Image 1 (cartoon, rainbow over the protein chains, first blue to last red):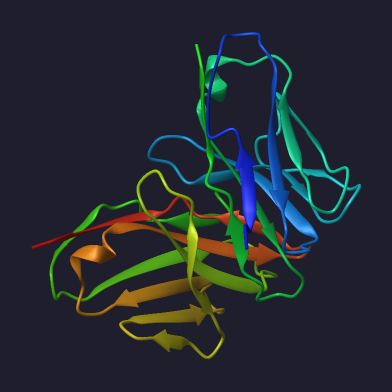
Image 2 (image 1 turned 60 degrees about the horizontal axis):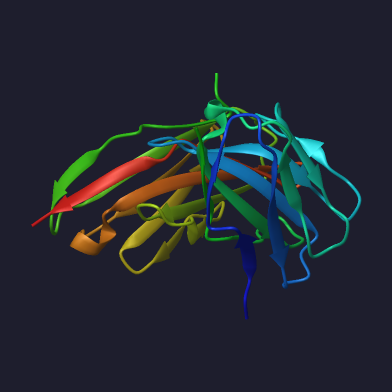
Length: 113
Length: 109
């Protein structure tokens, strides 16, 4: 059972380049999330999707766009990467109910130079 | 004020010690609470859910105090393998997960 799969695991971008981080889950979860984690810091929510076709901004959405085209996949796009976006990005998903566990992908380590 | 706050630590304790962390949350309508564990450069993983009546899982005990809006995690008989960052997670209406900044625990021999 794969759970939550993120690609790529590592990426180096030059300032101004664009890229899309992919995330897919096979647990039939409605909710999916994108977080970023800077060194020594907690996770900050970038965007959230409660169901297919819906997305909401989180705490730090500027500079990012997301797409939830189907129930399985939730992608995060950086249109013009900046050094401030150097971080570890985690995708997560969770099911229904108040006590549902969230599962995380292994993370994408992004460096913008 | 952040929605979920934790003391970042680090908490440095000897093996066998008992250690406790608190986490405060600002939204009184918060419904669900969890403790996650995160090892260095890894993804967070669920440690335990926090129920209104409190719950215990081996050496770990979680408590919820709704009146004062905090949750706690108690670790008894600390092991070297308990060294990690412990993240408090709160779920509000809309099923959105909000994380605290994490508390780092270092258990020394």
